[in-house]
Image (cartoon, rainbow, N blue to C red; front, side, top):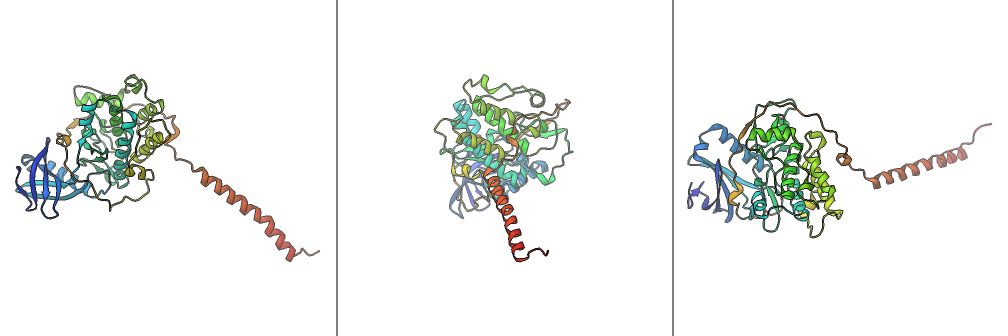
Length: 376
């Protein structure tokens, strides 16, 4: 496909705005609805390989079933001249990896609102029964007004199809960001996405990754065995509470992390609201709404349309052969923040109701004996 082509007799390709290992991205115009869209077109050589074709279709289906302000919307899917394509929401701005390269490290006030939004999008996917499995800053698009959207569900897994005992010798994903259990070829879970979000937050705050190596296999080993350098060594003035949160989500054992992205997002939001982060800390309306994870998503919201950045399409996440290393000892978490939060107001009201009911028992007994005196 080239600029100027008419795709599916409906989409006019205007310019190429991204290129990756398996697909190219074009800014296009939807002639039927008269709006600008972004179209990811699978490369012709990959279109002939059933595995890549299946993955491309899977990405379209997975993302099309998700409607959330912090997830890139998929509008259409089709094939033209033997090439598959996905029509997506047009998102202005750049991916988070590009911003990190340009800016270096982010302050706490800059990083937390972005991560809260990332947790909102990924948490919605978790509630919809999907594990993203490839969270990385390349797949987090940031608009000029600091709205963040999650994209690329190409290797997402449905929770219903994941068996706890499953194991694979080859793992798909990004070795810099995947979790220890993914590195071992074990079944992913929402806690695996939480770990990847923790790696992204670590990189945002420090300007560097927690683990660096020359090969994917060595990176996998580091995720499994090595503890990351404490953030305070890179950022001496970092809040101890925030450093503790990051180290918790980077725990080797999934049970020692926050269970879902929603829970991680609430912890970060509460950290910001409590005043530990200096102004200006502005949470978007979408991030604030995420504080109640049971709330239904607002599917009627109008998405923002503009172009996907050139770096939004990364090379295919290459399969990594699992290194023969032993599993680490389960980490014991002394942080009780992962326990369910107690609503003390509800507890107090319940106690008052119990006292009120208990106080009526003697009264009714007195009434009964007034009208039914005991026979002597």
